[in-house]
Length: 283
Image (cartoon, rainbow, N blue to C red; front, side):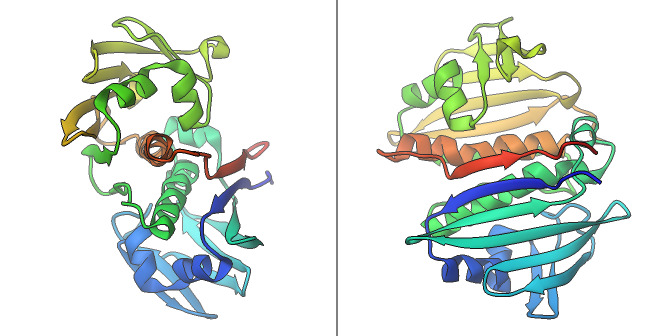
């Protein structure tokens, strides 16, 4: 069996506040799921349209104490395991997520709902961090819908936001992963950098206002910018994909990245909350 997906993140709140957000059902309904019910130490359940296979609760609580929350989660007929560990760091908390049964091949192919686990937790943790910071939350993915659209307000000019979306160095910084960008129609948009071996294609570009990238089977991603009283209204839309198998994993990952894009512009001493992500060695 492979090693679990492991994510480490620094949250701007003490352990007690983080644990409350992780275990209070009213809090969970704000940042994690449409529905949540918790009765520790016996029950920890969440479900609804913002949860993969969220037609009903599929979790089984395994452990809940001051620093560890662990539960089994049945997804696509397989019982996975999710574990949160909380470690105090001064006034902050380092949260470690370990998620079993994540296979990057399933994420790429869309062959199993388990393929969304990495980006589902990235978006969920970003919204947990936003909740703890008192910042607006990002739009959650509706796993029952085929319309993929998100909108955020960033406290920066459209010129600054546009540069951060089209400059390779800036985009790599806030996204947390190398991105090579040729900002012209027909140019390359390469996750992993230009040497990674594969690049999507820029298919539409209106300087300062619109950028569209063709990702192949997962469709075309479009970023649209508009001024909003000196701030920037950023709208993200995914289109042209198989509506019978929407690219929920890829979409959720892009939406989760908006958290650091916003902080990149709005914090004078910006540092990403993500400390490390360790991918499973094999399926």
